[in-house]
Image 1 (cartoon, one colour):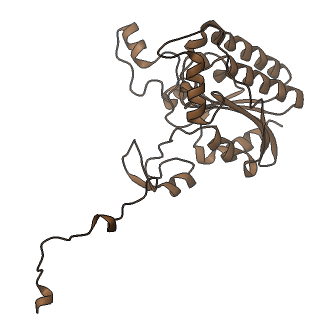
Image 2 (image 1 turned 180 degrees about the horizontal axis):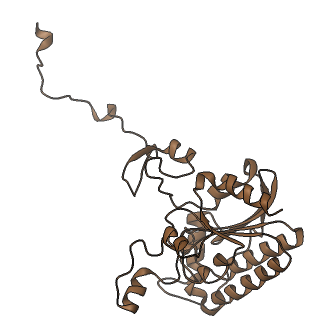
Image 3 (image 1 turned 90 degrees about the vertical axis):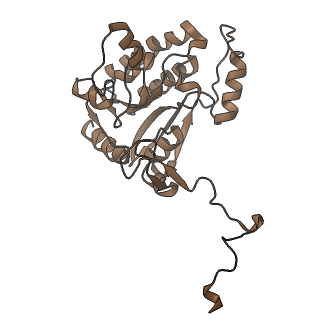
Length: 280
């Protein structure tokens, strides 16, 4: 019966024989902490199947989600920021732009494109938070303004997907000018009765909220997105009072009349299609 007796304690496996799970196979939700296979998380439009937490994603995900077969014409893809103020903080602004471009593979914090969504023509401008916090600089404002002009010329509905920390401090006044420029173009779009839908995602704050993000014919949002102008800490210190629970969440903003509805990312394409069909 010697086969029932363990002669050596423990299991001794040579280092070269040990196998580890490859990185990237699993996704742990930062909200509920539960683990999901990465493939399932991706198929679920990067939302948690347990708590429906919406992971922050970029323009590549939204374009793939909304444009039929991910086919679209990218507009003004080679616009890049200059250095109008010769700005330097911990590094020179041009160096920061170059390093961010290399890290993210993006030219700036917004991409614009024209394609079809369930057979309907649509122009989309989508911000990328990974590029200097989705900050609004002169390139962001110019690309959005040009995309609006393209919609106006072609009489195609315009969708703005915002995700931003606000104006880009490295461009100071040049950044703030983009608020007026984009708002003026949107007024022209409204006069021409071309539909404009603004989708606010987590987070949408600062000068972006104070301009084009809140000027849609329909202002909609993803669940639990942070939406506001100044941050909660700044407001709390200014008014000297504790803020309501869930302050500046999409649900709070909807309850107070600043949003038309909240849409789950998984349903976004169908909801937008239904909305545009109603506006024909």
